[in-house]
Image (cartoon, rainbow, N blue to C red; front, side, top):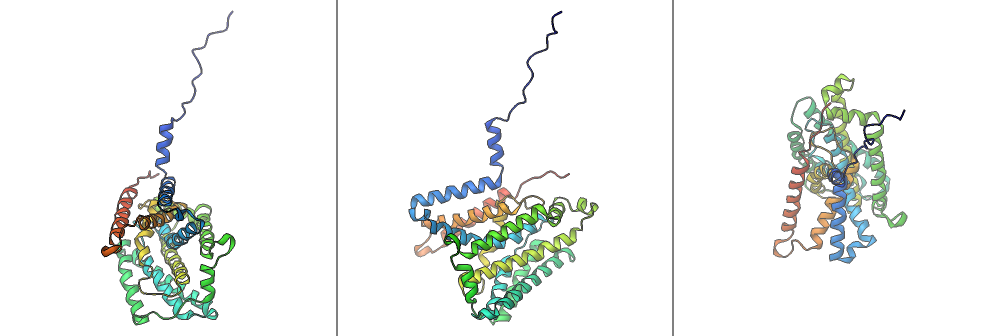
Length: 341
């Protein structure tokens, strides 16, 4: 007898077409932000060839590093959920720089104590933010926005309106001095902090608890996680990383002034959100924040290259365009959805 005839050819699993793969790539904030940064950089290089030089690339990354470090804490707070946000990072960074500058007073001998005092001052801000949000139920936006006024009020009392001192020579050398491949120390510090933060988020129990609380605080609590402790830690860490950013700015600028880190307040949120960290919490990571910080820095430099602003208008047109881009980006990325399990 002949063998029975089978129905037909064995069906082959359908492969996703190119359009599906392309749409998937376009949904990846890290890839999109990275592509935009490269596109802006290449366009600026065509307009001004010096923009493509190694020295200019290092300068761009150096400028991005300050935003990137300050945005570390912002990333942690936003991932923790609960509408978490820390608008006081700029004021906290300024406070840390002012405290450190006063105690350093241009001397290396005072450097260790100055750093400890600066970070302690920053940590106090984080503790107050955490207590206000978690124990007194003040909305994070309101709490951290109000803390800006409190911090700057304290700074004026502390300095009399005239910050004193200067960065220690060792700090200036550490931040600005060229090391391997002509790369300044601040970039190596940023790299080390980035590796540490990414490892914490991906490989430690704290990172897992942070995502769990941000995804669903109730479920996390039922699983044995303490949401209050996790969020408290996030706010304190946010202020500590802002303090580190303030120290880096002090070493870079060598002197400190009031409102030193104000320009990093909203960009720290934008860099975090552009990098794929959802404002609703539980989604994202620091790698995306790095790309977001670089993108915003390249955008600002691009607007300068194409000579937006200047003349009688000063920097106003550039600031308007930069601010408008931040609003559009935050609106677009801030509406991300996620599944709750």
